[in-house]
Length: 281
Length: 281
DNA sequence: GAGTGGTCTAGACCACACT
DNA sequence: GTGTGGTCTAGACCACTCC
Image (cartoon, rainbow over all chains, first blue to last red; front, top):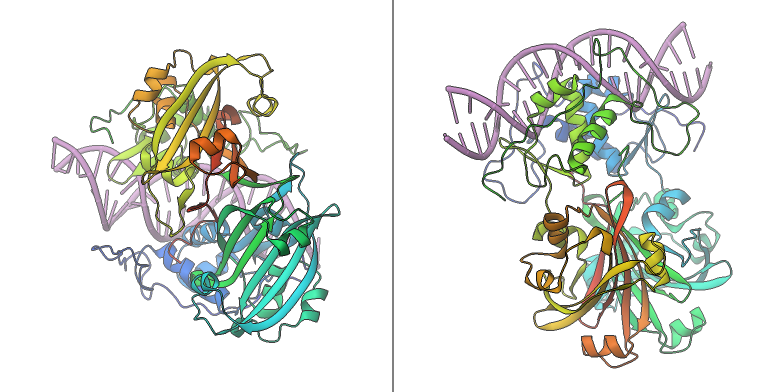
């Protein structure tokens, strides 16, 4: 956590022009499944959208502190309770982090978040740790993978970057990753920068390319290890392995990464918790 | 949804004996990781625990309506905002469901919840549907599986019920389930009742045995189909299949079911969404 | 001590559902 | 119409962090 977490001045539009508590505009009654327009719905949702736009468009970089809730309430022209509700949701969405007595901060991709939210391989006995990452390949090429094209909403032939990593846990190779990235979003990414990055790759996306991965969808299946996977993971060709295809999304559910992971589950498991533990139960 | 959703009278202890807003008992300052005691922590957490106890101990069966929030506030001796916050968390935990204009209800295991929260197999093209279930075996036996014993916190040799199901999607066998249930929790469960149940098995647990599955933890790996799985799923022996081990938990994180699912992922995927979509984003 | 988020209150009005 | 949950307000006090 940066010590000099400066508090930025952001410009926010007042949501309620005149007297507060009057201009209620309910969501469209003939409800389509679509998102509500910018000037509709509950006030706290409009406040949330206003904050999201500021965060998303970079006026307020990851790690920086937001104005205090009192200040936000003043500049948005709503009560502090409404601001708190908007911030509550943004915290639940992992977009903001609150620290009592210090302030509210735009969330960053640190190692803990990576392990907690995006890395789901752990030893069969439940031991969890961050993997060692080894860059195996990096190249710029034309997209020729129909699955990747669909996931990234690109056409085949468009420029992409392809990254191959090997992840090891306690010296054992466990995962082979193949990432496909839209070249347009990652201009200037080089093999050197990838290899020398200090933290996780999602930290790199965020700090160097202003891309914050908010969530991801994964589809898993069992497969037989092909020659390449067998070589990288040190298993026999044909051994059963798990194949996980992930599409990572940023603001507006825009896809920014398509990844195929091949996992050697001989000594490790892919874990999945359905719902969180009860808080204070 | 039952039409005659009667509203039950529940007895709730007043959380604040005297004048409201005074008796603040902060959580233990030398914070252990343990849960706070019943009379500690924020008021809304104490209200939540009070409601949980009522729900958990059956005073208020699934599907019934809680007293109105105004009433709860009165009987708990707290303000309505505090009640709302407690209920907010219970709704987030899938323990209560709110319906505007109708009331707040104890959540039930319906088909939709099952599909949404506990069934994660879908066709490769993304099509989702409820599986057809076929009961293959049912027997009472002594526990002889070390993994199941650990998951259920039982000793080997204790009485358990073992259920085997085959799940088919559009006529194709896709999943082979083997469930291990502590016999002590499911007294009176017979093959007939299992086979003739109308809904999902979690609905049966809830309606017949007052056991509500709140969450589950799953560990997946790839494996080669053994003879039994191959026969049930119609795949060659040795074909790669996914093996998913699930421990289902009820209140207090008490394990109530251990299940090993073998999934034929030739035409279907096991899906996993990391974080929910942004609401109103 | 000043400033921040965390909790709690008391009341108002709105949208919705049932009757 | 009556009663429910949904939203919003205005202000109070507490706990925590940093200076």
